[in-house]
Length: 470
Ligand SMILES: [Zn+2]
Image 1 (tube, helix red, strand yellow):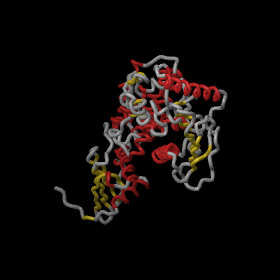
Image 2 (cartoon, protein in one colour; image 1 turned 30 degrees about the horizontal axis):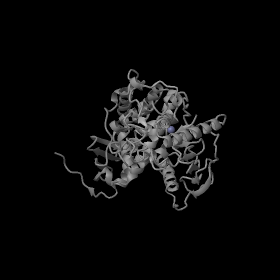
Image 3 (cartoon, protein in one colour; image 1 turned 90 degrees about the vertical axis):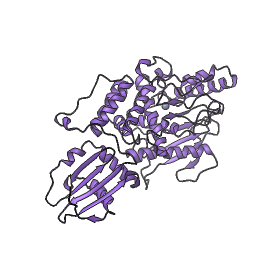
Image 4 (cartoon, protein in one colour; image 1 turned 45 degrees about the vertical axis):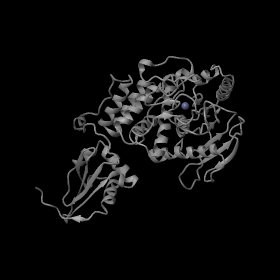
C-alpha cells in the first residue's frame, strides 16, 4: 500500500497552478511532504496479519477503544507529544477533541455493528496526531496511525472537522489488516472506495441516520467558506462535489463508460472510486433502512472474505453479490446485482445460485423501518393461552429492534416457519405490516436467542383466551 491521503494529488495540483501564489506555495508544500512520507515508507514492511506495528494491549479490562491523541505542534515529527489518552477529559483544543471523538465513533461502528475490536480485530490502539505541519492540506493513514493537518483556512478547514474523513482514514487501517488491496489502479480505487463506504457509515451510524436521510458526502465540513462546492466527494452523485476556480471540477466518474485511464494518483484511485461508490449508494438506498446494517454488512463480509489484493471492479462486484447471497438470500442479492449493473459492472454475470432450494426463496422484500408495526403472538402450549403484543419497531429497545430487523431480513425465516410443530409446544406468530410478513414458528425451530427476544417482547402482554374466528 502506498500513501492513503484524503486530498488527492489532482486537487493539490490544481491549487499549485491556481494563480494564487500563497495557495500555490501551500499546496506545493503539502505535496512535497506527502512525497517525502511516501519515500520514507517504501521499503517498510506492510502490516498484515500478525505483523502488528503497535502491539495490541492484551490486559484491557473493559472492551472499548484505546485512544491516544498527539500534538505535532506544527512540526512533522510523528507521533508528537501525547495530549489526550483514553478516558481523559476533553482539552481546550478542538482538533484534539474532534480526533478523540472521531476515533471513538469509528471504533463504535466496527465494534457494535460488525463485532470487530479496532482495526486489527484485536484491540489495536488508535493513535492520531493533530496540528501536523503548517497549514497542511491533508489527512492520511500513515500505516500505524492517523495524521491530520490544520488546513490552510482558505480552501480547507482543519481535517478533524469531518467525521467521515476520520472514518475514511481508519478504514485504510482495516484494509491494511484485511484485504490488503493494492493501492494502484482498480484495486487502489477499491481501497479508496472501501474507505469512503466506511467513512460515511461511521457518520451515519453516529448520527443514527437512515440511507435516505444521509448526505452521502465525504468531507462536507472540510471546504472553507467561499469554496464553490459541497464536499470532496459525493457517493450519490460522483463528479458533482465541487466546481471551483481554484480547485477545478470534481473529476469522479459515476459509470464505467467514463472510467478515467491515468497514471496520476496511483492510476486514478481517488477518481475511479466514484464508480463503486455510486454502486454502494444505489444498493444501500434500494435496500432502505440503515445502510450499515445490511449493505455495510455485505461489504464487511466481502473485505473479510476470500479477496485478493489485486481485486478489480468486476471481481469485487461478484464478491459482494456472493456475500449478499450467503447472508441475506435473493432479495439483497438482486438489489446488489442491479446496483452494480447501473454503474456498468457485472451486468452480464450472475453468481451461481444454490440448487434446489432456490425456487422457494421469497421475492425481494424491503427491510422494516422504525415505523413498521409488529404483532407478536405466542399461542399453543398446554394451557391454550395466547399472548399478543403489537408494537412499533421504533418503540422497542434498540438492540431488540435490530434483532427483529435481522430476523425479518433472514432468508431462512420462511423455511424455519415450515418446521414441524410439536404437541403442546408453543407457537410464535410474527406479523409485520411493512414489509408484509405473517409467519408462525414452532418453538423448537427457534434459536435460544430468538426465543429470548420473543419472550422479552411479550413479557408485558396480557394473556388472553383464543377468540373464535369468523
Ligand atoms: Zn483514502
